[in-house]
Image 1 (spheres, rainbow, N blue to C red):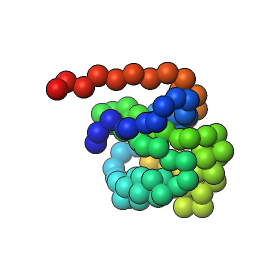
Image 2: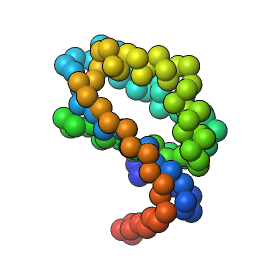
Image 3: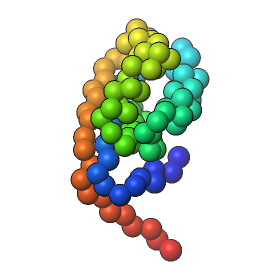
Length: 107
């Protein structure tokens, strides 16, 4: 995975932090499917994700409306329900407006 390329500010970030239950139970396949589906959604800008015990996925969006549409996507609703039933011990979602960003790249 690489650092997401985002546009000039402002844009929005959805920070999904989670702890998992044991075993896969279809999690990896669903996570991959949701990444592909999210990338097809209007307003999607990119994603970054890491998991080592605590999982953190940050997705970037053009607007709050785009975030709301993704939350209500029918396939995403199925994944959310499975997450509550099977895959997560706990999770927290934070939605933030990114007003400034900067970067560094070693040449």
